[in-house]
Length: 278
Image (cartoon, rainbow, N blue to C red):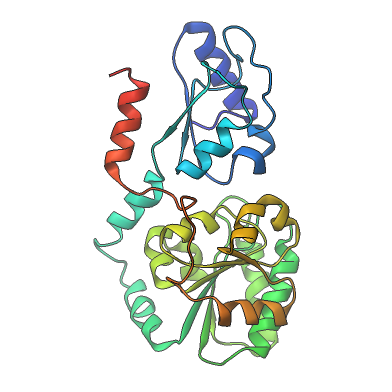
């Protein structure tokens, strides 16, 4: 489950009171880049009632990040590396049947020199992200295609319609919004060469496939200082900088170290064994 929020807090408290172990499964950037995972420096005897017994994280990078916000010797809120099984299962299922209208869309990706996934963030900067992207598309090569994906919870039909109207009013045709927003991430992401976002946890999903990410909002640097410093995330907060980043950073040429999510089932099984005390 997700441990925070009204329903999450209720599940944590009920589990704690009844002695039922609880697990928070990572579903985006966490640890020191998420306020609900930070600064638990003094864990009381018996642990916090509103924190899970286990933090299931995507990689050793996030294990370290999570453990560094807990006190040394903490026994109540343990971290296990189970990997990003949501992405792994989505990638596995993407080899199955494909909706008829998606087949030509998938085949057409080979006709474009760059396929750029745009995921406007849900937390900040989504309007500015679209402004930067639209102006970059106007200035950029005609053989680049922009796949614009609305957030499934934060961007509704009205947002998608407004983006499409803005792009078409500028005379742009090398983009898609409808299929890019419908298609499961595990089917869409392998088709892409670069990710552009103001800030989204998809940047870590992209790392698992060697896809570089460029942020259009400077606040994202605060969210992911390690990635900017270590050269697997990039900042492009103007159309010119964004185009330069896409040109300069190609798929398969970045080295994320252990920040990329683990996609192996055996790591998930090992994590389950730890949590079940086997």
